[in-house]
Amino acid sequence: MVRFLKSLGRDDQGATAVEYGLIVALIFLAMIGGVQTFGNTAISMWNNISTTVASVRP
Image 1 (cartoon, one colour):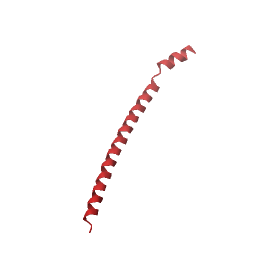
Image 2: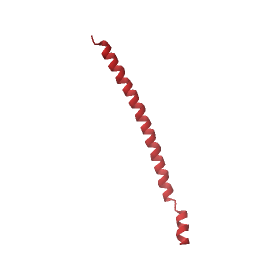
Image 3: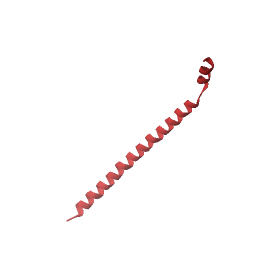
């Protein structure tokens, strides 16, 4: 039992998985932020086009 606990204490494979998980989470958050910014810019552009077209119509 003591040998098992010592080997469990030295095992660092779980730590590596957690680190990769954190990296993936940060990349995901950056992607979400980028998509939100792009979406807001695109919506603003299309609203501007719609307003311009509506003002030109007789």
